[in-house]
Image: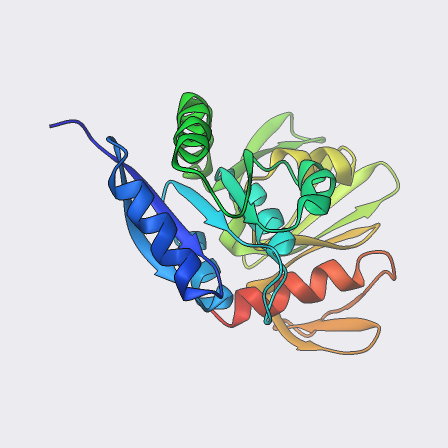
Length: 241
């Protein structure tokens, strides 16, 4: 039996969800595994990778669909926007959506969009496989060796001059590199840029203040004004899971 692609649906309009579910039921190779009118609940299910492809509205009361797209981009999951507002199409490109459906959706357009996304699924599945490797090999600048740093052990990562410092539950590890390079090498949504010189593990955050965070180990990290909104949005989503 051919494995079907699992679809998650988020829309605060029940009728829109029912219409999509009915259309998808008539397209071979796909199945709806969850429907949510609560976007926060739907986002949590998607973050737990309960689906292979997510279809979401944009204008919803609790959270904007474009923020959901950003969260899905972090884990590499394909997202299709389904909205009555065509003017969001340009913004959706900026967050790398895989498709854009305009309500009322036609079954042929939906089918074509799903088929296009399916052709890209191999890339997503490879990224998903890579994401299962929850560690980074860090070069030791003095000993010419490699240390395996598990992301879940990291409290924060700091850039000082030409060196990146990994502060972990097991101690400090230093690598000669830039923070941007390290950030691009990490596929772990809980490590978030909070300042031009810092990444923090949201699981290690004990308290959030107006201009800084305090970690479980007592260290205070500044929040850069350019990173504050994105950090707070992501932090609130993560801690509510």
